[in-house]
Image 1: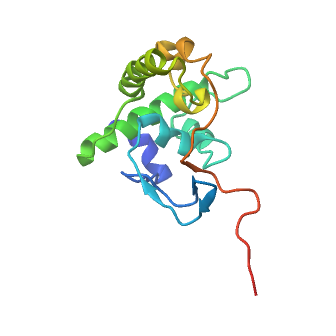
Image 2 (image 1 turned 135 degrees about the vertical axis):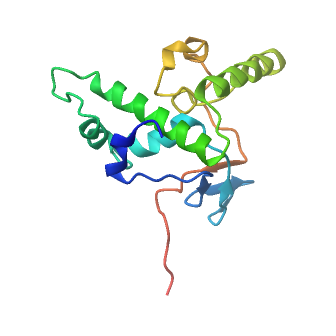
Length: 169
């Protein structure tokens, strides 16, 4: 594989996302046992690994790659993230598992977005969930989508309501 320096981290990821901590909202009802399965885009796996609210492994990746992660060199984050992205894509390819790249995904999304705008006059979405953190400004979607109508259509699969689980005894 391409980055043997990362072996010391013992990183693993799943080929298929299965989300089970969400709720399905339809018709005013909230179904709390509504797991669903999808597919990963490369940047989703990387975000799961590097986001501070998730696994936050970027400092460990930088250390394994022997990058200068001092405050004077803040670009180490992009470099470590890009290497991790390449490692993830390579691992999927080597395992024979399909994965869509963020460039392919956004190219297809823009086609759909333009169709929706032509048909409806608007296209709802959440820019921060559509635009990848890696190479965002390199894709047409970066500026085209910055004025999206931001709201959620239902039925939808959503994060659980703040109350969470209730226990009745």
